[in-house]
Amino acid sequence: MERTEVVIVGGGVLGASIAYHLAAKGMRDVVVLERDRLGSGSTSRNAGGVRLQFSTEINVRLSQRSLPHWERFEDEMGVDPNFHQVGYLFLITTERDKSAFERSLALWSKLGVPARRLELAQ
Image (cartoon, one colour):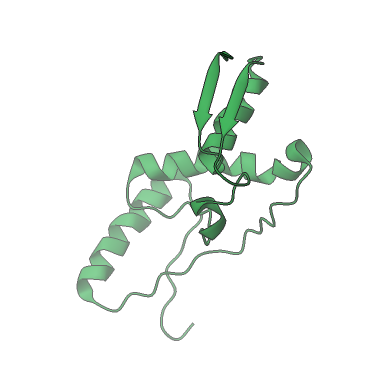
């Protein structure tokens, strides 16, 4: 019976990331189990998207911490992730949505997220 120190079940984005970071910390006995090709499960069907515009502070801060990793991904991994920062747009159609958006806008300002309100004429 073979033994290994770490077994990761699932070779999607999370499993692959865990394996990568363990190896980067010096762990050498890591096995990733995936029923098909790495990244071929739900990860391959994800539309993908990286944004800072969330309504909770913890999600904004987590996204802020992840951004530098995306920016240097190709240099570190040798694979172009096709990452482009192109902005994000919320369309507000109700007063309730407007109130929620204004709260989020205040949070983003507090956390240094570049965001602004556009009026209909713009």
